[in-house]
Length: 55
Image 1 (cartoon, rainbow, N blue to C red):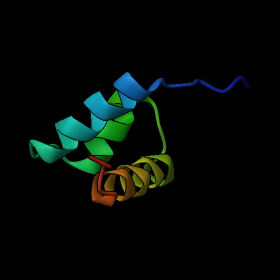
Image 2: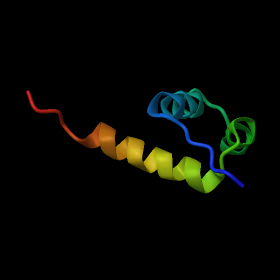
Image 3: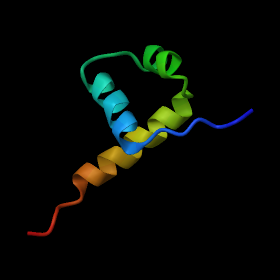
């Protein structure tokens, strides 16, 4: 079985749907990703938001 890759814009769209109140199992089913993958994306995204930008 081949792996489906999501680019950063698709991942961000899915995470924004989560922020708007969508349930994780529903999101995962709709987009065809596992919950483990979703939570991995969420953890990475939160780390990126926490890093202050230089400037």
